[in-house]
Length: 403
Ligand code: ADP
Ligand code: ASP
Ligand code: MG
Image (cartoon, rainbow, N blue to C red; front, top):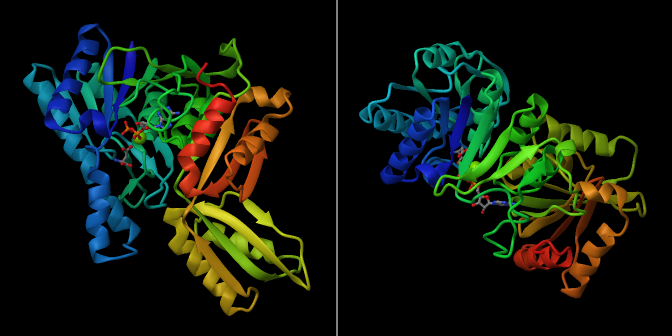
């Protein structure tokens, strides 16, 4: 078998843990499999580097950020390769560039355009264990890019697709995908299997256990994806096609996203084309807009509220400032003390009343809902950040996810 094994920040969090990873990889190799390992930076390292940059600037150049942030993964890849060599294995550490990961030009959230896996394949043929620094690639100008926070998951899935691996294992600090974040609700249950669709929703709605783009790509390339823990031999969760899952629960999980902010545009001129101008400008600035609400117009004016990731706030504010200057808008208000809770499940497609239950659960707990959005398989609500954990736990109970 050809296996990709990705180890997240906690799994390589210190030297002892890197040795633990080397032992685990060696077990796989001894069992007769070929292995490509993808590593994250040591836990906390990427945030530490961001902090260093923020010491000098509140809005550092993105190309410089990429050069800085990609260094954390190079440390762990080299150390793991050295540890494996010391155990008598033939191992080679590769940067994203050496692994052939080519991205577009969007620094700090680059998309992978192609992978030229020749160096990896040659090394595998020579019997080597390949250790790739995750989270990074190179653009056509030869500059280092990074793949967005949590992007080592994407590196692993993309590599698994490119070398046609039989399995892609994501090792993390929890033993699989749970009905909600087990750190918020200890009664959360581990799922044996989950569909790509549901996992994609959970990941996009804040369950950072897998980066959302990695799930999207795994679905597209049909990668066999398993999430499990590096601290024991416990079985993990298989992420697979919906048709491989027999039992389809109404609701599979609850996700929480604390990373969103709400922008309220007040006194927007009520004329055709306004929304298009604002949201096109935001898109050009690469601001990722999520929920949007426009109120009924009054006296030629309307209000538009929307949410963006906190990391996109600076860019969003500068777009809004231009509209304020042009007089298309009276006022802008920003609120970072919000969060988004979501109920996800493919079973919703064929059942009524799932959304109603979410709303009544909020009401019973006296939690005010600010914004709502729904799709075939999810219901999302924006609420005050103070109620984040209460909301998650009460929804978990309301849908009987602990049973
Ligand atoms: P890594 O550093 O290994 O990439 P992350 O911190 O990115 O790990 O992701 C693992 C974390 O995701 C867990 O510690 C857990 O708190 C969180 N998490 C959020 N939602 C879920 C969920 N539904 N199932 C499991 N873990 C979840
Ligand atoms: N080290 C990067 C981050 O913290 C990438 C990753 O861990 O997947 O976002
Ligand atoms: Mg992660």
